[in-house]
Amino acid sequence: MKAILVIADGMADRPVKELDMKTPLEASHKPTLNQLAKTGVCGIIDPISPGRPPGSDTATLALLGYDALKVYSGRGALEALGSGVTVSKGDIAFRCNFATANKDLVVLDRRAGRIATEGAAKLAESLQKIRLEKPVRTSFLFKSTIQHRAVLVLRGPGWSTAISDSDPGEVGERVPEIRPLGKSRNAVLTAKVVNELSSEFRRVLENHPVNRNRIEQGEPPANIILCRSAGTVPQIEPLSKTYRINAACVGATALVKGVCKAAGMELIHVPGATGTFQTDYLAKAKMAAQALEQCDFVLLHVKAPDVASHDRNVRQKIEAIERIDNMLSHLLKNVDISSVCVAVTADHTTSVLTGRHEGDPVPIVIAGSNVRRDDVAEFGERSCAKGGLNRIRGIDLMPLLMNLIGKTRIFGA
Image 1 (tube, helix red, strand yellow):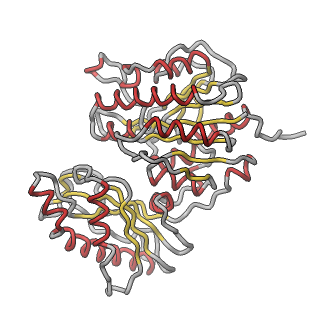
Image 2: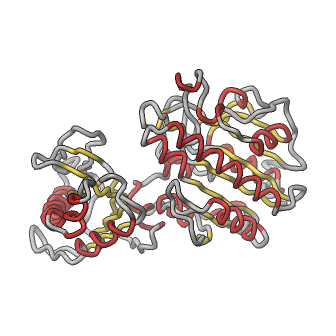
Image 3: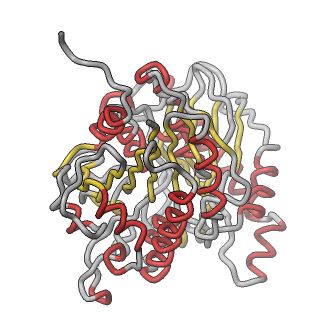
């Protein structure tokens, strides 16, 4: 037996008035998801704990069976790993946003109008040429990933993750100066260096041809870099050792790929997979089916529902869910369901009303030939809550899947 876990990022939601108090998932046309519910066992998951909104990093760690409360060491390094950047011992990394701010450093758009990946790459190339001499000569790497997302890595020993963020987290708020969280010399130095880099970044971005062109086109310029979630690579046991499996990840976002790489999983490149709403869903399904021929476990991740939620676009979220349903239909036609266990869930609830991650549980379905079926007939937040899995934690999912495919060990005699 083999297993595939499909994570539809941010798919779970809350009831929406314009959908007659249904969630976008409940309002979607999703015959494949409903069929999985009818033939499988359903439940709901608290990715971390009830009422605690998780990030995609901590949620993915939990869904892979890790205790995120113990092993999580910051988002930045995971983002860097997933983008192909080496993060060595002593390095620290940040998740960054290209953003738009006014002359008073008040944030107008945290994602710079979701700047195109190609434009962001040109900006990043210019930022990497900066040479910082004060407060200390610094070796760093700045790389754009997808759209507005980027990573910053400070190289070498002597840095500290005990610093604040420069991302205020809300539009209309002023960009704060990064501060040391404590009095350690390393934290003080790190805060000074990142503030100095941020100032130099802003100087280069203000007059960059890409931004001049964006302004001429009526688009928000990417004129500031927001840094957050300073982190190091987490020290976790690879899945191959824990469960004696070959595991692979089919995804496009750097963060999820970074979590999977830290877990010892193979990262599979999919042409056309962009980590955006316009990603090639069917190419992902095809590659996941191929990966299952060689691997015991495959994680298939799709970012699109989360993007729509953050943009508070309910219709786009429904369309993303329906495209995922079609992707699942293609996947199921190309795998032997009698020997493959299929699980579908979300990593967290992202509300189209608030545009934020929320602490509500997410639906889960597990289907396969040896699964104890329940009476749930539709895949949704409320219907799955009535299922046979009941309410579980994110960390419980991986042991459940590994048990179903015969990869767990007996506890006791």
